[in-house]
Length: 495
Ligand SMILES: [Zn+2]
Ligand SMILES: [Zn+2]
Image (tube, rainbow, N blue to C red; front, side, top):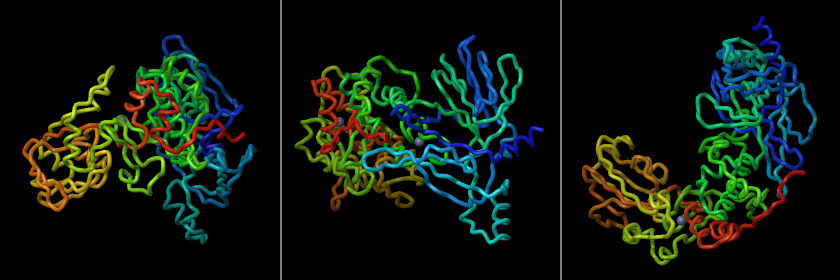
């Protein structure tokens, strides 16, 4: 019986991710968990309400619940797209599968909807769909995995009783909910969906509330107020950039909660000062030439911030060409080996430094040359050539020689090669030779590194922002220092 129900529900469609504006506030779905089963736990005697879409059925559970998919292996379906169109209305389109996506039009963030109309046939494998397409002269480009379907889930409560409900489910709890055994509390509204044969649990919340779960993880909850405000504006701008890029359009949510988007940890670490920093900068974002600015940021530049074009090899970006962060570094050419070594060895002392700042301002790391070889897929290495440093001193091109040669020209990969060091702004201790502009090092058995900085070095330097705030700079001064030539505006919403 359940099996039949599942088929009946197959073609009932709904909005895949449900970002929307309400009273001029932007609401989003942020993914918190996915898998074939999801466990929600409240503190004893607190309640979770679970409601089917359209309020067909609603239940209240007390304590914990375990939700699992029935027959996850049979939840992947392929269909033939008959028609595809984009609309901007608020109508319901019951015959189509609707995916919302974002676009930036005339200084506004617009939510559009993509309607996918599938033919009535569906197939459990792609091969079946291709066979059908071949027989009926349908190009393979029309075959698509049906982005979202309803399915039956089994819910087991803390008394071991079993219930069945149909996704998507609206879940609500005013008290703390812990997901899959994690100790991080969340509360409010959630959505549980079946996407690509998996359950996904999203938190449904306003952009500003999302930020209060992002800012403290990104800059620490004890940072000075003007630095928190600058981080709030940068994180808000970055979130909107991520939305405009539509990276999760097909995933059933708007943003993930990991470093791929921005780290979001709900109520963990939130405090009054962070709320106040977000409220005081409410709706403020950074624009450049009327377009949403790339407000990328990192922990610590080490002296100068870097150019995005040097680190990510793209076109130069006018507000991301690099600025001086520590005045004493200004006159030093950090792109030269001698300048980089001198500056890394120079002691920079600032008052009120916490351990995070001290750790990012100067660090040392030892790693065996065997491990470096292994990290880059060699049997051994007997020569390292530093081919290029960027303006912040970061190594952006390095060649290793051993049983063969490996060239790395990406700061992130270079950090990984040396067991994920904090930044690629480091030097290898010992003597070096300058051969045609390349710094040549003969690696010892144990390679000793000395370095400064943490992260990629592009955009706002968080530790620099903290230092500026301590010295009396305002949020606006901090943002204009790290993103020169940009404008801070409040008016970017689709009304
Ligand atoms: Zn993401
Ligand atoms: Zn800095």
